[in-house]
Length: 464
Image (cartoon, rainbow, N blue to C red; front, side, top):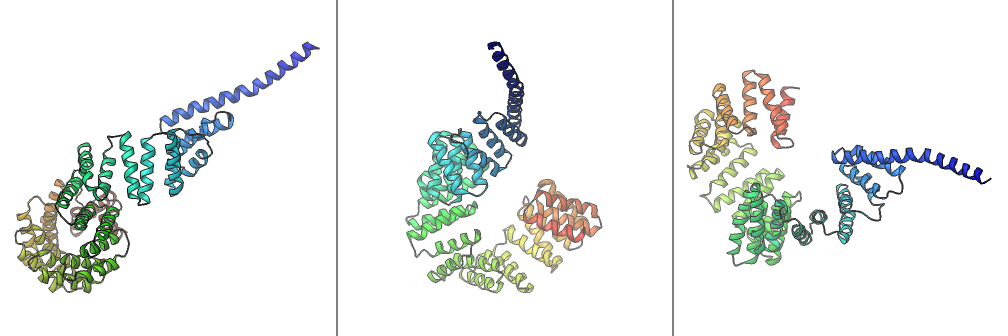
């Protein structure tokens, strides 16, 4: 009887082994394959094999996290969230993947919660980086600053983080900003140009006795480096310090426009505070230009020119306004006046040349000589040479235009205006294949940019 029981047990054990061993083998084989695929960044396959292992080896609670991390790498953010949020315990990488997945789906409150919960367990640079990203999206600048400082405490060699912290400190604590900006520049020379702009503004602001004016100076510099969110915050701080700072109100209006908001109320407030300010008139001129209200634009720049008659910039802006109103004779007069006020400045000669070429007016007697003067004054300026090539094209001198424009491209291969003008030259010469190549280069190289849009429009027109 005992032998029969043992025999039965042995049979059952054999059957169990026959079933379990293949399951175990397949499960662990799936893990090995998934690990290799994850290392090779084949995230989709890794996620599939980890999830297969989860089904076969349900006691391996770590596998869901690995599957979630792989899904995050595969950019399947909802899938990653479903896997990761079901786990009661995650690694540092798991918390980061969960927070990043939430932020990539736009669920910032959940992302914030994931990063904060992860930081209860791990003092992690990647989690603080995620936290900073969420605070940036929420425009909580002091909280972003604190998160960045903690990130740098754990990883001191990230140039972008130093640069970003320097930007925030420029208006939150200006006396601390220069150190971070200089460190960013030393770690990554590509930040040099922006750092120089901000350094000059911070040094200037430190000499200004008025706190509101200091913030105005910093805000303008932040705008120059295209950090309009932070620029807006600086202008708002300038107004908090002095509600009668008219230029701060005007720049607040400009910052709002740069961020897709209206800005007109701030500009109206600025004008009410100081109707004789040239800066306010100029910024209002920009506003009306964007609104397509060119008569109001002309009026603003005319007032600026009356207030500052020796400034060629207002004459050039007047020229643009007259052009948009269709008054070409007045536009030409204004552009010529700008060159008379600044006869040694290549920019105004170039603007005059381009106006003539764009509108096919006085190209021979005014436009072409203006372009030649621009090149003489700035022989290393691609814009000046492009204006000369465009003037030759507009005057019908196709060989000269081709030679000039090819020279511009040889010196600056990604100077897109010259490519567009060269394409127009080839079209005028009947060389359609060469024109097509120039246009497709611009379309593909300036993806999403203004020159790509021009190239795409020309391709549709000439190569339907």
